[in-house]
Structure formats: structure tokens, C-alpha cells
Length: 278
Ligand SMILES: C[S@@+](CC[C@H](N)C(=O)[O-])C[C@H]1O[C@@H](n2cnc3c(N)ncnc32)[C@H](O)[C@@H]1O
Image (cartoon, rainbow, N blue to C red; front, side):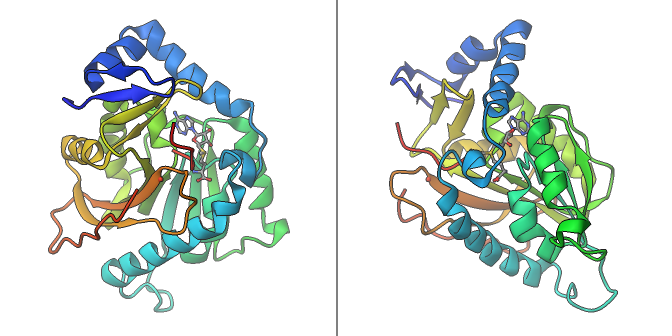
């Protein structure tokens, strides 16, 4: 990827290849990259504030933005979803953390949600808060499977999911693992199903975070990776209402088939978790 970038300490990289060679250029470095990434989150409290990097108060705006995007996608792609007994909708929440997105959004739209998350204390907190006893879920809208595994090692069951939701976690994956994850995950989609990727966006190139070992990619960086995955951009939307000091945040709906029409919304400004621009 011929785009320059920097790290959280202000160091410049000529291009992404230089950065990736340095970070994950041999097997032991790659093991370290993922160990540090998960290790960072193993030290974080299992709470909304914890998974949102101290910005727990953006949860509401984030969920409202996601819901508006999902509503549009539902009306276009699953127009009969509301009809009784017509659809049994299933979603996968990737890098789910404590199940914040599942609890506040996905369970209201899907009959079943599976969660995949490598940090066991987050996943146990999700299991607890999403249990039927806590009345968040019901027999008709429940969290079914809890997979404690990182995305670079995960392959979904074939044809299980209407939507695979990936939010504020893909920055932990190297470019190669990003592409191989989405290529594998495609088989997990039902016909007509799609991915939603919601992520921080760098103004240009990329920003490497030396603390949690993640990378924030620009919109054009993401689009190049989508191309390598063989995914099509069906629709995208900017998240509104987040504090100005954070990276811009964008939502992408991605399909395996060529979309009949593509809608783009314009990015007016500038927000993996909401984070301060360094
Ligand atoms: C900023 S939190 C977001 C959690 C959740 N998606 C949300 O929006 O509330 C980042 C999450 O990515 C997870 N994560 C870190 N490395 C990962 C990996 N290699 N594969 C999948 N998830 C990962 C972390 O454990 C953490 O739960």
C-alpha cells in the first residue's frame, strides 16, 4: 500500500509495507503483535467505559447512528423481515467485547446473535449480561454462541448469518489477516447477507498505536482492502455526534455480490474505539 503513515509517537513511515515489515515481519514479531493487542484488553475493565477507552458516554450516539444505518439496510435488503414467521435473522458480533453492540442494538433486530471475542473476561461479562435471567434477551431474541477466539483464527459456520457486524476491532488485524478473515467469513453469510464494518478513520494513510498494537486506516486504505477481499461497497455513512477530539468514524455495508445501486454519503469532517487524535 503506497501510502505513508505515522505512529502514536509521531514517527513517520514511508508506506504501510515498511510499517508491517517492522511490526510483523517474522513469525515471532507477529505473535508479539497479537499478544500485545489482546494483552492490552486483558488489562481493561469489563464495562462500557472500558471497551470504549474511557468514552463510555458515546455509547448512545454510536448506537443511534448504527441503528439508523441498519434500518436503511434492513428496508432495502430484508423488506419482509417484519412479517411474522418469514425470517429467522441471525447476526455475528465480531470483537464483541462485553456485548455492548449485541445488547443495545443487535438483539432488537435479530433472533439470534453469536459473539466472537478473544478476551475471556469480556466474553464472560457478555454471557452474564445477555442471559435470559437478565431479561435483556428472550427466547425470540437471544445470544446463542460465545466464541472465545481472535478473528484471525475464526471461521464462521457456512450460511448462518444475515449480518456480520465488525466494530472497533479490525484495527488489531494485519492487512493480510484482514483480507483472509473477510474471505473466510464470506461463507458465513446467507444469500443476500452482508457485512457492516464500523471503524475509526485516519485523515490519510494510517496511524499505528504503539500502546494497544492496532492500526487506524484511512477511507482509501479500507477501500483498497475491500477490493482485495472481493467485497463490494453497498453503502457507507459517517457517524455523527461524537466528540471532536476523536477520530472520525465510518460505517460500511459490504456485500459479496455487486450492488445494483451504490449510495455514498459525503464525509464532512473528520473519528478501533473512539480515540483522541495523536
Ligand atoms: C474498542 S473494543 C470494542 C468492543 C465492541 N466491538 C464494542 O464496540 O463495544 C475492541 C475489542 O476488540 C477486541 N480484539 C482485540 N484483538 C482482537 C482480535 N485479534 N480479534 C478480535 N477482536 C479483538 C478486544 O478484546 C476488544 O473487545
